[in-house]
Length: 139
Image 1 (cartoon, helix red, strand yellow):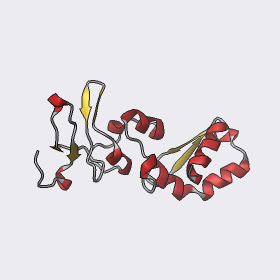
Image 2 (cartoon, one colour):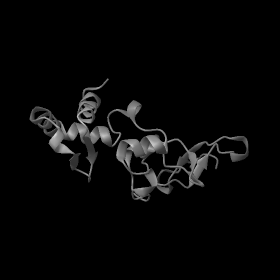
Image 3 (tube, one colour):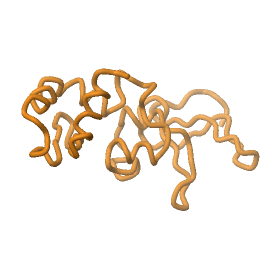
Image 4 (cartoon, helix red, strand yellow):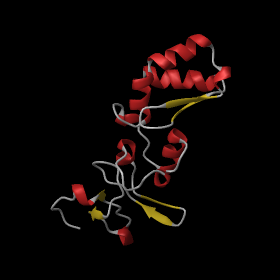
């Protein structure tokens, strides 16, 4: 287990939670429950925590489903600006959820409109890319 993941779990064991509240901000919910020394560790590891929460640096721990993304970021992937890149969304697998079929660019995490190797009738969800990262592959 990574050092950052262990730190996040320790915070949660105290009944608190760290969430990303902006591009370069963290919020410690229920901070009064966290001991001062643990709070100091969180402050010292701010940038590593931000990288971890955005899915950068530890892709093997990045969310791969909408539910995992929600558990990690407290928002569904489509509730963030869908037209802007998000590093963690690029690891999400295409899936049906809430009556919609959701697919994100595997390069940048924007909403993807170009599917490659997709055959929905046969359950092949393929790979998706946004207009900026579209390749010359077959649609």
